[in-house]
Structures are given as structure tokens and as C-alpha cells.
Picture 1 (spheres, rainbow, N blue to C red):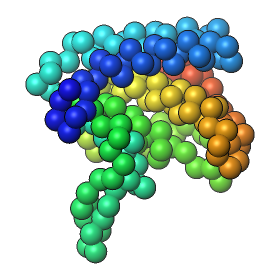
Picture 2 (cartoon, rainbow, N blue to C red):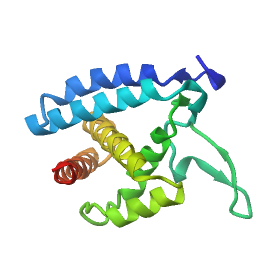
Picture 3 (cartoon, one colour):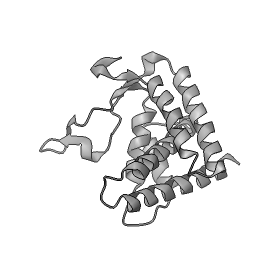
Picture 4 (tube, helix red, strand yellow):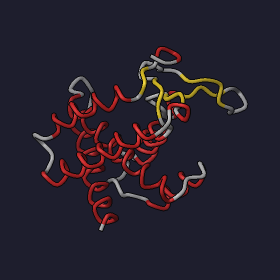
Length: 178
């Protein structure tokens, strides 16, 4: 374990492999193949990243878990039960999944918004390719969450929205690989 009791990120990848097995029953073969290759590249990136470059990962980073002071400056973070140590891509990708969602409209991938988001972090084209792997993986992760969140009010609506988002990102991802 690392600081804050967080686990080194490799544990997250092992758990992710198990979660992908669950998706094989409801994803298309193309989606499974794409997610398997994405997960392999994420795993490779995790292994290639020196631990000295790892950082604190919140694990559920979105505006609802950020506390602001009376001057709108970040004061703290709450809901740290998923915190761990790993590459910064984890929190960036999860935050982007949260920012891409707009339940008022059907999902439409906005590459310009993605580029602006990454530019704000000083990301390069190489980092964008790595980031896209993490983005696609976290979109799958959220789809799986909503698929199994039977306790949630309107669970079907959220699952269908998230699945549409996953499907469109997979299609966009496949186009960009050609």
C-alpha cells in the first residue's frame, strides 16, 4: 500500500481484467476486442511508468466530490474510498467521462472539448493516444457500474445512456485507428 492506504495501481488493472470478463456477455465481439487491446496498452503503460512518476489518484474525481471555499477555490476532496497511487491518466480520464456526460441530450463525442481539456494539462499527441485508452476503459467501467446498479432510481436510463456513450466512443476510436 502507498500513502493514504491507497494501493499501487497494478491491483486496479488486475481487477479490470475480471471486469472485462463480465462484459463479454453483452458487448459485441468488436467492442470486446477493442477493450482487450485498450486494457493491454493501459497495463503496458502502467508497467512502463516509473513509480516515481505515480501520484495520488482520487478514483472518483468529479465536481460533486470537490469542496470549494467561499472564493470558489478548491478546499478539499471527499469520497476517497477509491484512492490509490498510479499514473495521472486515471483521474483525468474519469473526470473526462464525467464532463462528457450530459443527460439532457443523447451522447455526442466532442473531440474539440477533449483536445481543449488535454491542452489545459499540457498533453502531447502521444499522451492523447494513451489518454484515449484510459478514457475508453473508464467509459466501460462506468457502463458496467450502471448495468449493475439495480438499486438506483432510473438505472435503465443511465445504463442505456452510458452504453450509447461507450458504443460511440468505440466507433470513434476505431475510426481514428484506421
